[in-house]
Amino acid sequence: MKKVVLPNGLTIIFEKKMGNSVVIEVMVNVGSNIEKKNERGISHFLEHILFEGTEKRPNNREISNEIEKIGGDFNAYTSYEKTCFHIKVLKKYFNTAVDVLADIMLNSLFREEDITKEKNIVLKEIDMILDEPKYSQWILLQKNLFEKHPCRYPTYGDEKIIKNLNRKKVTDFFNKHYVASNVVISIVGDVDNWKEEVMNKFTLKKGKTFKHPMVEEPKSKNNKIKKIKKDIINTHIVIGFKTVPRINKDSYVLDVINGILGRGQSGKMFTEIRSKKGLAYDVGTQSLTNKSFGYFAVYATIDKRNIKQVKNIILQELDYLKKISQSELKEAKDYIEGDYLLEIEDSQKVADQLLAWELMGDAKLMKDYVKNVRNVGISDVRRVAQKYFNNYTMIMLEGK
Image 1 (cartoon, helix red, strand yellow):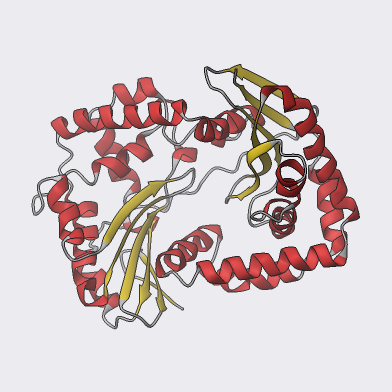
Image 2: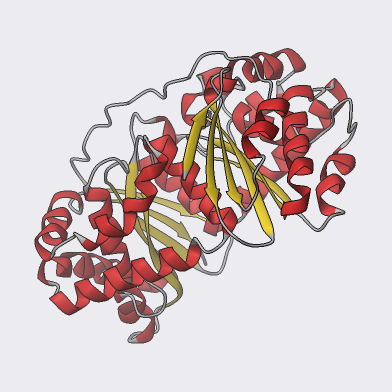
């Protein structure tokens, strides 16, 4: 892996990977966590509007077709802490991919008519998320689990604020955050001219590196239950606990716990709730560890009459972590290693991981991930379970 910082402050991370493809991913150090109250949703909206036209490629079709007509893939996403745009193409088209990404970053038109149109699209996207319990349960969990941290507000923002966006608000936010010092580019593939190509095309102004605010989130002191009746057949439940950001070493222990409880069809939650008792179809766990916050959660889709029984099983399995065996620990660590190493055989996953770790502090940390997981012992699992799995927040989207 090579990392260089260009004179304008833009950082490039290059990982040589043999094969036919090359991936270039642009990360802007901006997400919903940094938005002010009157800006909620603007980071996500920018992700949309940058696909709407430049002088060179005046509409969405011409931008996307530039990549799709050569068999490539072009996409983007916004999270709480970053906004990313990525392209995967055959390596002979590397220059085209760089040109398209640089074009939307430097030359987007931000036409009023496009902003008006895109507002309607984003509002429909919000409706879709709120209509689907599998998505909305996570929005509700974070809203109720966290008290002060801005992750309690969804990345899609506030509908009223989206409706009132105009060109000035969008371009002011863009000009403040889409600057070279706030951008990192990862490139994964077998190409030689990566530094020169990026330097020639990404002529962003330097600007200032934006630091994410570190919020002191209070510990949960009691259990909290939020129930919402929905016109659906199934009941969706999530039980969540505040944990730690990725930079905390306990995050690796939580990953191991996730491997014990939630892996595939052999995790403890799946085994106890679905395989043995047939109480759910969809059941699993999630350990989320970002730069400034983290949580662990167990979810299940069940019949309304089984809420109490499933909740008790979840809490029992969390308590059982204090008694796990060496063989259970080894299986979880083997699972994480295999799953992780197989995942990063995909160049796009490597590009994304490099940026995620760079956001944490240094892309080189990616190379230590498996080692850190391997170093987790039984005493670590017991300690972490005792420390974090005390006071929970439970979300119930109650069906018929």
